[in-house]
Image (cartoon, rainbow, N blue to C red; front, side, top):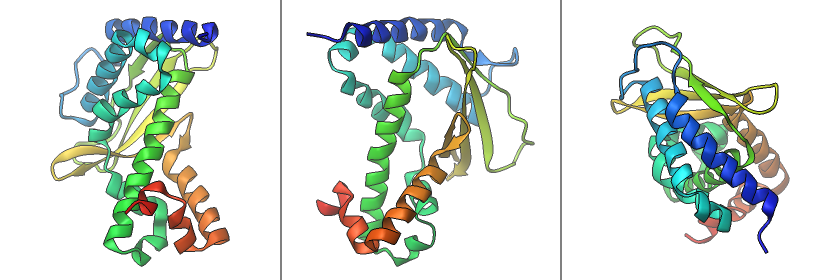
Length: 210
């Protein structure tokens, strides 16, 4: 039997997605350029929320199917190699090319899990992409979104973005002011201290399978 509470939340998420399509936009009247940092975040947000609305029945039956939405629409805009290097810090230099690839793949899988939970666990009524404060040519830049929820406290989502080969990519994600990179760096550092680097790598499925 389906969880009716969860099913109701999925339907609410779908309704929120429709509201997104109507109300999501930059905090200024001018539309951001599609290839600008805030334009990419704005466009991807619309695409994700429309897909959530279209997939409401499937998500109710199989919540894990939300991961396909993350993989298809979000991951192409993330620089995982840069993210993985930042998370591993000094340990990155000790890894072979193959180990770097499997750590990057493992981090990609964790990000899919984290972002999928954000999509399913929060109920939104509208979201606004704030204009950039940075001057032209600045890098990195921070694109901030404010998501309004039924709770009094809105949810802040911030994307740290850098220009990679002429294309803006996300290199860190802050949800409610908590940095994804910092969270994973602390988590990985503690595990490496306890297990050693070799045994830590064996805890990552992508590294065990290579």
